[in-house]
Length: 354
Image 1 (tube, one colour):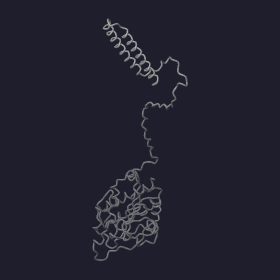
Image 2: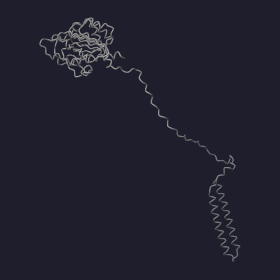
Image 3: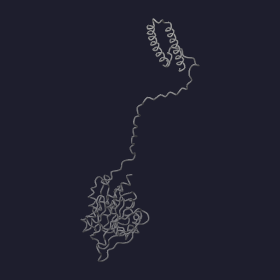
Image 4: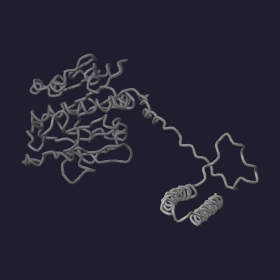
């Protein structure tokens, strides 16, 4: 391309030089008379030639335009050699993908937890409270008062009072009891075979509360399997000596934060006894091999494996109380009985509703 432009320029220059020579020859042939006219003509001609030279020069410097598209294409030999580059295509913009929906929560396959309070209200409860036949304390039946406060409704609540025969009959009946209370505070009526019936119900996960002060008299009899299943054994009898100090028979709560002392009633204390039974205060227990017993109340605050007076075992479904209800304040014992009833029933339903 550049060589063809230079060749064209050379042609223009030669043409201009030829025109100048012709002008000079014209000048020499002109006579003196017509010198002025000739000079004017030469000037005009020179000016015109200069303009033509300028135009031709400018045209020579302009790059040669490519041939029109309808011209015959050059031969393969005339084409320049080049390396083709890849052609990139910019993809058309696309819409963003739709948001991913979170997976639908799968409902649990397990059944909802049972309404323990509703179950407690509908419980079948069997009560033996031998204080009902006591000539002086029969009007202060604290177990019955606690049961009434819970306001059971929907189940069977059978209170046989001090009728041991009726109690046995109900224990052997076809009724599926949720809770059995054996309050033998008026001494030694409930013993022997009754504890065989109780242990059989305990194995069926029935809630049981046994109040007894005379373990020392029957510890190696038919009550023994009941005690060993719980995980306790007799340590010693708890007697009152003549001239005893009242405060020596205070009962210490060993686990004040335990549910038994806080639901539904709290602020319970057994440190101010009001002694009714002067001779025998009860029985002291100790932990033994087997079972899951723990002492919730006892004689000494730092003794949690012996000197026990209030024991819970069998996954909280059983309570053994080895002191007498009427030796302690009315306003403390009735709330404690309410708590014991609810606590054992709750654990009974937790074990049987799974």
